[in-house]
Length: 134
View 1 (cartoon, rainbow, N blue to C red):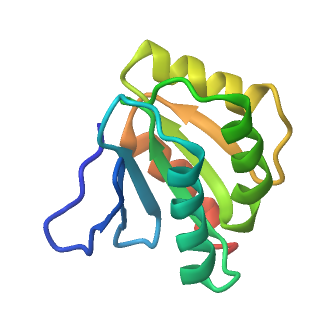
View 2 (view 1 turned 180 degrees about the horizontal axis):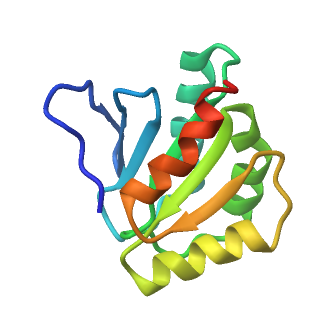
């Protein structure tokens, strides 16, 4: 699982924390295995749409604590995530997190590159090439 370094601003929501690393990658981590509801997801995505002012960023999501989501949430994320995502790397230590990432990224075409990794170092190395594009 990823963890924020001590010297970064933590953006905290009810079930998630976010931070930008030194390279500008938006890192995301779930704080609980309890599923988020649609309003919680909307709050997070709306926050970043507003904060980024149309800019897209590379995103590193830690799916280790993720739980199942319903179709309404998946559809919302599929519609809104392209507004903020330049490229998305997913890491997970849990079988459920890996399964959810595979379902999300392999069943639906996305306008941004996405890939699943087993560790943070490989994920960030892959995202580096997209940082140059952004």
